[in-house]
Length: 386
Image (tube, rainbow, N blue to C red; front, side, top):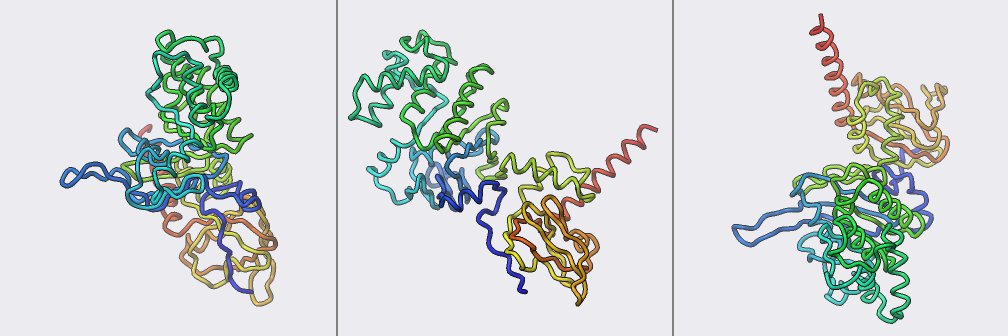
């Protein structure tokens, strides 16, 4: 039996990898080594640094980070509002780094833009503002059809009763909802939203994000939201954090929660805070092991900690391959060699095709250090109370 871990279809947490593989889904957005600069000469400033990102159809991505971290720049690059300078960027299957102006114009018809500034025309009613997006995207359809769809979309964002009002007759939150309706009315395949709920009260904000959720689930629309609004984090499939122009973390929320619950079953990690667990989870990498293949061998040096996400493995020792244990989803192995520095004390092979999350030695040691720091803090706290 060879030690042949097959390449995983996704390196980060991804409970949908099987569906994507079977349906042959390609990324809706794919960036590679993407960089961007403002200014020229001595005033030239780099605002995006070597970013790599894949976003799939039907995903809702929330992009967070401090002001000035590059979120809006990345959003406008994806939306073709800025030209790619260095690196590669493909949107809806079309590469942007060599795209012509005509290519970009056609692509924009499949993108819904929701800007933080409403950018509404003061002389037009809410319905007319929304209808403009349809007239640009579908010029051959009738005005009556455009009007009907525009009113339906205003109804969907809770503004059906204000469809005939002009912007100066609307509140800030109502203007924002008109802008949201305008960005969604032409059934885009990709929605780019910059602080879409910042001006909305809790109920209106919830109406909007539930609309996003339905579009993503039912129509496989990809939605990227730049926001500081903590009230809508629950809608996210993934949270991408940018700091100083670099993607600091990219966490699949639901899977991170599942994996964190699995990790705390291991004594090594049981005292880590939820934040530390989530951060550590982002360093796990997926490995797919075919049935009958070895994962680790007795006597080898330990280099990884493994968590079983799906499947079954057999642990055995000695030349006779004496079975020691059968491990399944949520179980873990490989920590003893990392803790002691000794060679592996058993071999492990996949009984079924198995999905593993692997943590390398460096990240494992960082987790141990956090655990030790936590225990020292507890001891100090107890001592100070005496």
